[in-house]
Length: 434
Image (cartoon, rainbow, N blue to C red):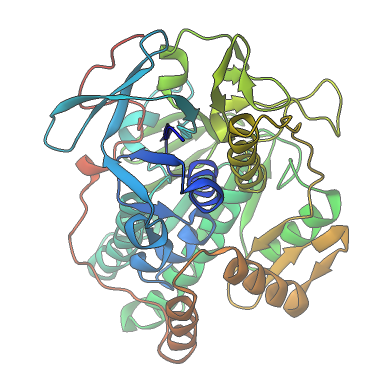
């Protein structure tokens, strides 16, 4: 049998699980190439614990070469797709360009930070999309406490111990929860700062925390944050960001040296560069995940506007749960095509969500059963351990060590602000169109 070459662009939840399933189902007659700028799959849900000093960064980086032994990794960033020539142009870290031909293509390019036209945001806010941003944020929080410790000006000290998180969704809420615990632990270790309570603000234009999740999860999360002293301001956002703080839409000004931007994501610019039809900025696809008029091309995950058959007229949310399952189905449909079998439609009812609020607190609704407190925390931890493709023992070891010795709070200086621009969609090389 002639071997078929399948190229997968992106190793996020969608691309990684597609590659793994495809290599298991058809390794004897399919060659799989995975194009990705890093040699690891990032388990994004645990990234807030890296920023909060609870996990080593390597714990959330799943090596692609060892977990996908039958998949060829092409380390680089996809810059263009020639649909007629069936070729993907990618550029590696040394800026060498190469064309990779394919028989079948899976576009799983993922997403980048979503910016809004707010003055000063790109210059003064910190994003949260990958390991470099998480490591930078951990060191930035540590640095603010250390600089506050030596500040003689009470106003400067207060500003350095004031932290603003914009975006009360899944990411923003967890980043705040773990960041607050890290800062509190450092403050307690500084004699001059004993008795000082850092201030945390959570802002969102929505009318409640976790607007995309159930009311019960929202109320549980809001209650935990309020109990910890977080100033939760719904229906409010940043009007202008400066080096000294943020002007808010409610007319107030908050003096701060920390503005964390977690307002959501948008599809990778590669999606627009394909020239294919889009829905809400995501590639239009059929219910079997193929691109209309291009049966050899699939689009999945954050890059794809997959019709939600469980909610007619809507498209699936940009969540890891959908991305993983779409990746699995795309692999199965590719094999079905090769074996002359019918492709299946994507249909998935969500199984509930978990929100890690740090230090034994969580909100969860597994199978839509509402939980809070320690039961929710246990379910959340268990879910992540099951979903993590590799390295579970290391995660458990870090959790155990953190419970005994506390959170990691030291500056290594490995990532600077220049290395983590908020506009992650801005490439080092200009993107070429199709």
